[in-house]
Structures are given as C-alpha cells and as structure tokens.
Length: 139
Length: 139
Length: 139
Image 1: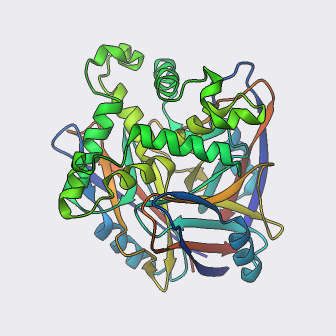
Image 2: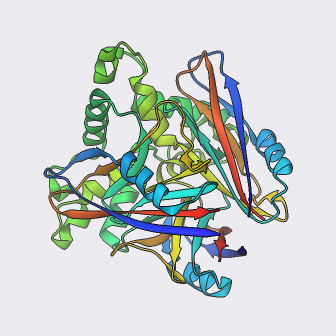
C-alpha cells in the first residue's frame, strides 16, 4: 500500500471566499503514484470547509447569501463563542453546513469525478494563512 | 489491496426524491470480494446527495419540507446561478446540506451498519439519468 | 494492509449534548498499529452525528441554539416522522446538518490534525446507550 501526504496553504484576502483547489489536489495525486485508492481532502482549520460543487461565480454568491442569511456574521454578540474574544462564531456554523472534508475515489491514477465536480476550499474566517490536508492511500 | 469500482444509474421522475440504494451498494461489495476495508459512495452530480438515514416515508417528507423551507425552488430568480439559464440554484444548496458522500466500513465482507442505517440517493434536480459512484478498497 | 474496528458506547443523560471522543479514537488508533492510513469515525445511529470542531462550551451552546432555531424539537406534531410514535423527527434533521461521519488521515501513527481539530459525538436523541464505529485501515 502506498500513502502520500501533502499540505496546501491558502490565504483568502477577505473574511470569506471560495477557491478551486482541484489542480493542487491533482498534482498531489500525480506525486503519489497511486493508481487505485482513496483521496481524502480536509480543512485543517475549524472555520473552513472543503467541499465539491460547481465552479460558477453566481453559485458561489448564492452560497454566500444563503450562509449569511442562516448564520450572519453580525452582530457578533449573538454567538457565545465570541465571548472568548473571537469574532468567528458564525464561521464555525457555516463550516459545519458546508462540510469539513471530501473523499474522492482514485481510478487509473485520476480523481474519479462526475462531469462538473470540482474541489473547493471554503473560507469563512480568512485574512490569514490556513491549510488543507491531502492524504492519498492505495496502490 | 483490492479495489472495485461501480457506477449506479438512477432516473427520478420528479424534480426531487429519495431512493434507497443499499441493495445496489451491497451487490457492489459482494462483487468486490473485499472483506475488510472502506466503501465510498458519492453522488457524481452536484445537485444530488448520498446520505445515510432511515427508510421511513414520513421522515423523507420532513426532509423535503425542511429543505424547501430553507432553500425554496421558487422564485428561481432569487438564485444568481439561475442567470446561467439553469433553474437548479436551490438544488446546489440542498445537496450541500444533505451531503455529497458517505464512507462505510466493510467488516467481514458486509457493510458495517448500525441498526437503522440505510444509504439513500437524494435527488434535487431530477427527470434525467444521473450517477452514483461506489469505490471499495481493502482486502 | 491492516484493519482495526472498535465500537465506542455513549449515553448522554439529556436529549442533546456533545462529547469530545478524541481520546477514545486515539486509543483505537494505538491499538490498531496503523502508521499510515485512514480512520473513519461514524455514528451508528441516525439521530446522532460525528463531527470535528472546537472543544469550546460557548460554541456548543451556539450549535444548540442554531439547530433548535432551524429544526425545533417542539411541537413534535410538525414532523410527519413522529406519526410513527417517535418524537425525534427534529433529531434526524439536526444530525443531517452536522454530519454522520468524519475521515481523518493517519500519519506516523497519529491522527493528522490541524491545531484545534477535535472529534465530537453529537447526540440529538439521547437518554439511552448508543454507538460510534471507528474503522482504521492502512499499514
């Protein structure tokens, strides 16, 4: 069994944003030499998500509006978590709704995707460097 | 290490619906010959979910009502994604809330389930043929 | 390839609650002898979650308030699932939003975590003994 580990680093310049990280994950898969297996991609931070959906800017605006509607950033005093001095209580909820990790099948050395699947890093408390972990196991 | 890949195809005749796909996943596991490992089941489309819950029609009606309440299909103009000519902006949100994939342990050649766990395909933009991927690795 | 399976049992004394189960998962990993691989942790019950976030009591109160706001327990008559005689229709929705399972990379014999990641059991229909499954595969 082969295994490969890679950290990807991102810094989103605003509080929230989505980054298509599919090319970086594909590069990690190429490095691994794995032909058949599973590829785990997860946020290493608890105010960020990794999820799979469409690379379409209107959709990303819809996600932003939906998440701000359901768990708004302000007023920050509405979240008990922010009594710790943080202002990211909303980000912990948004990340939970969008998910922490995805597992992608590896087949013939490729990410085994449907027609529109792309992997995104979802940032909900940005403006600092944060990490995604890629772990690939297989043969 | 063994690996096995299978696509399952479904066509839900309405816009939304839930299908219990546990028997099809069990059949794929039987074909794989894997006794100990992991089984990934994921929607290959970004307006559909794979999730695990109860096979109870009242619950499925509750999910439908909850999801329509939180991210209604109409008016379709409320979603910027629909400016592309699509009318499935809501489906991309519903799928995100219900999840893209599940990973199930394989033990003694069986899906290692709790008492009521069943695997469902959740369709949010149906009336066409769509796919689920099953990938099993192990020994 | 090695594999290891362990069930963890919990009884939350109230209807809802969160338990940090990271030490129990780490113990299972130690028992497994796996150095490189993947660790699946999933609720075996469909009214409970396993998720990764921060061990901070204010945040857990925020999750409780958010989930009760979006899918309140009462009136129980609002859920068709409760026509079966159950009163946990809300719990099936809450679990879906928080997630059933997490997959954690195993590197050098450790759970490969970011700085604040901790694994939680999320109970939404407690006051009885329920199980979490840990399945580890690798080498």
